[in-house]
Image (cartoon, rainbow, N blue to C red; front, side):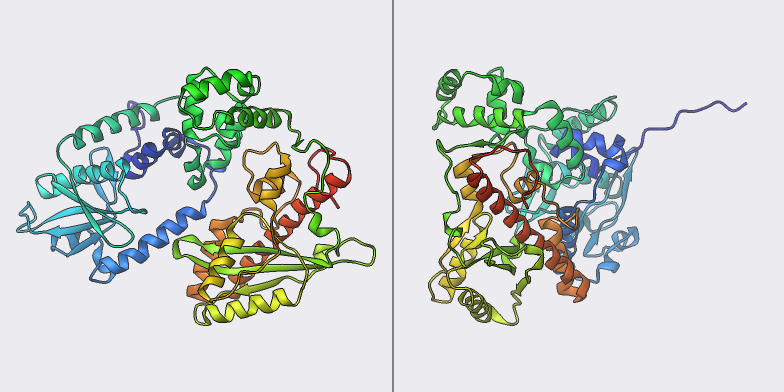
Length: 486
């Protein structure tokens, strides 16, 4: 009878290493997590599309000719995404660039190059280059001594791959392997800002909420969480029970410029623990007095591609005042999308915006966050004109009048707390950017319709928040459970 052999450990890869360097828990979930808990993330698709576009400018030959081991052995100027193996290690360097150093291949060698997403290289980028150099060593006969980091502007930074870098790389691989052998995943990362780009975000958010993590308290980032934990405040419940005078004193000793911040953090934690909103006004006041006598309101939301600095869609929903005194139901109102196409120029867009606003004199323009007012102000400046008046930032009004049981005061979090649901459940800003870039290349109508639908929902979500602000003031600051007002 043949002896049973245990399955060998799956190989380590550059993807796993980079995941681990960003978040130890992410690497464990990549290897052991339930695939059903993993959600497609549009940020990754945007990164891959950006990589392909940048490779087009860096590779002197057709991309399909710059792949494979034969291209490397033939001395191609560039080789992209070549699968390299070395024992239990795997990796696909983004780009290998030929150099004049002799190697086992002949009178030439190769250096690994990484396309960094930002202006500055990080420890993750340098260790990844070192990992790729380790995989190249058997092919070249020696490990490359230099690698390259290429930023979005095409500027190149030479990275010395010797010194302490190999030791740091080997230590990282050892610790990665140890984490992958754990029965349970490592703890949640303290820097939860990185989670926005992670396909495991929903699962980790649920764990963080269940455990009452400090990172779930609005206003607490990685540094503040670490500082509070050093003071013995382990979680949200502990923070909500902390004496404010003591915490103010401790923050002052820590060098906090605004020790009174302790009052806000404790109050926010208490609200999130209770699940009930808290009015900040001593007496109920109307957060939106501009709506009392307005003939109508304009709901306004912009969609932007921040990397391209392109505000590509200005969406409006006009709501008229009805004879009954209220505003017309938003589902009966006409959605007005204004696309900002580059071939038409900004002057035409500005004229269209002015015409739409002029057609609704005296109508307040409701938006959520500062994006819209900043974009209009800059657009007006470039056109040598005055910025439109009457814009009302609901985000600011919410923060002035209410403390809410939400981990973020963004539109998605606040409107969702009120019970609003987007008609495309998986849609988000990054996916809208992806749709826009795809539409620019393909001009397929359904992509534009998805963008319009998402933007219209954002306008409707803005109205849901406005209704709640007005209704709670009229009802005497009733802290009702989060069900959307009719």
